[in-house]
Image 1 (cartoon, rainbow over the protein chains, first blue to last red):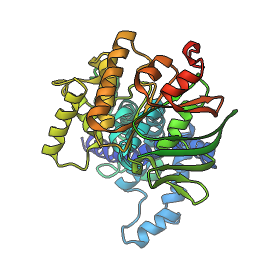
Image 2 (cartoon, one colour):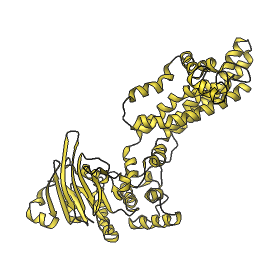
Image 3 (cartoon, one colour):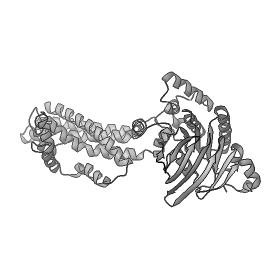
Image 4 (cartoon, rainbow over the protein chains, first blue to last red):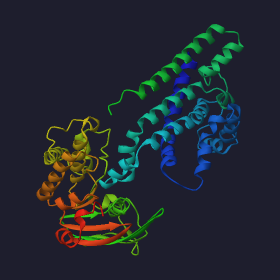
Length: 217
Length: 232
């Protein structure tokens, strides 16, 4: 069950990172007008539609031992990224990010600007308003993004395989373990893992459904 | 404290070019819809950025394009009551009213909230949610919230226009009482002559983005046939 535990860890860290990067980006996309905005929207959503192997290939170019991030990382004494759990996190992060951004952006766009204006007239600055007004009012979109991002992260396969490999007890996630088990004819193991992943995905959808209801306003 | 406004701005097809003075007390910005009342009010609050001009409150310059002065809304210390209540739906009444009181220590803040709710006739409503209030109650909370940080001037954008006549009249009376109790000057946008008659001492009449008349309500009413012009 190493694989399942690693999957949970990787997906959790990746989703949190995607939330940290995605929510501010979503806000910028929802609220600001600037040059190159269309290009940025396309770029951040690209991982959603790219074939996972293509995504994995690009990631290799970036975080590989001769890639810019890979070299910086190694130069900082942190070792290599490829074929480590860190690489799995990177792959899951990039895969989850568009889902977080999409949902959160939708959430922000639904928040009427008059609420923010009211806060401005009450002596608040922009960052405080973001935290105290905009984010709480966009919470449904943000939480949906969190759930979808997590689901996507835990199911990440193609890019993970390319940058993190499939090393049992080291970089083998539940998704890659299923592939491995089927290839090796260990169908019982594949069954169990598939069922657990399905339950998790179903649980996420259930949570999203509940978010749509139950609210105090 | 008197408010002096002289601004020019273009909003889409609309051309605003107004200069007027609100000498303190209750001043009404009066005119039909599309006259530029709301845009003027929003410019005073700092929610719109006029192309040119100057806005000052007493000796304090809030906006002066030529001098490069444009205080952000949070530094203008003005209250604003929107046409629709705009209470924060994720905060209860108490926290809505306390929203502009961040600087105060907690016990004082709680005390002030109670005082403000009493001022608007909503004692004991602190724990309710905006969604559970009637239209009139929401607008009262919005008033309490705008009053909370002791604004130098309260800007009101047709605050009661969405309400039934009976409630509207009661709230207008209460607004007058609040003005007397707190001494806070008000700039009220309306297109309703009855509200002007009832509340205001000084009136600024707008039409199509220009000031067409300005003066004491009583005098203007005598001079002209405003009586029969609903919204001019």
